[in-house]
Image (cartoon, rainbow, N blue to C red):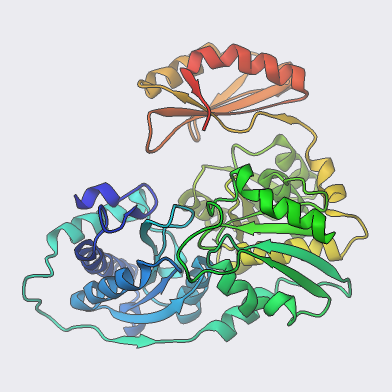
Length: 471
């Protein structure tokens, strides 16, 4: 039963049907053991390396799950610092600010309200995924039993308010340069409804020149006006309408735990996260020429081109925050971006942050007389398919056949993440096909120099991939 809630990058399930209080205790015990042993194995033996941070989101089940998680952590001997109701990027900051063994966020991110779960980070806020320790947490958790007497020294629990330090850290990325900006923020009834008033003031009143129109900021009911997933276009409809109605400069929609965000321009147009990555890359490269920029390999070719034009080194990365953060560290990258709306910053400990992404977008807009749509338009220079899913029960064989079909002098292929076929030089297109981690699906992302070429590519490649599904 315990294994069913462990995913590739985190722990998640319906509460209390799949994820219950006993499991939370076991996961706390197992995570505490892994985090402390990992820190000690790295040669970090100070008393702080027995400290584990715990934060939680606004879901109704979060206080109870956090309570049981903390009980499991202290049963192992971890000292818990409870930082309370926070956004996930706050936890990444706090782990580094206090130099702890790690931290655990109680959240189910963008999932419906009946879900909950845990995101675990080790020292320096490095993510704990299946390949980086989550398997060990699962093993240790399965061996733990809260009904048995616990031996050893029990850890202590203390509450800590780190908001002042966090606010100062996030605001360091914001400079309105004397310009007045109006932004509609859709908190999706999630943790941005707590974070934004604390960081920017109610309606942005703490920042001179900034006006925030608040949308879906109520986060105490544990319900959502719309699914807290900004990647689904229908979830942005309220924001798009509000931006036009309020004549705002832009709109920003956060997911449930506020580590991801999507931008809407002044016309209500949705800005592609890869196009935003290209825009933000040029911004950071101005102050850090020659630096690396990491980008999700599904991103538009324009990202690579803009990074090179800005004097930077483009680094294609595998999809997922575990891989993106590892690539950020390996290449000492100044910035990174994913199609999922995660944006990573070297000056934020290589971690992602929706709040810092918002600050950076506002800063870029404030430094120019152009509108958001004018800034982004040059980045959107190619035709894109978006992600298309195909049902496929033999994904590995299909990927092998796809690779073989395009192994020729006109195309380049690689297997960094799934199979990427690049025929841009000869045919004006490229595509990536990846396996779903959780479903019998293949996911296609394609891009071409124009719509006609893109249409022909999709017509040619789709029959190779299985039965197309729209969801």
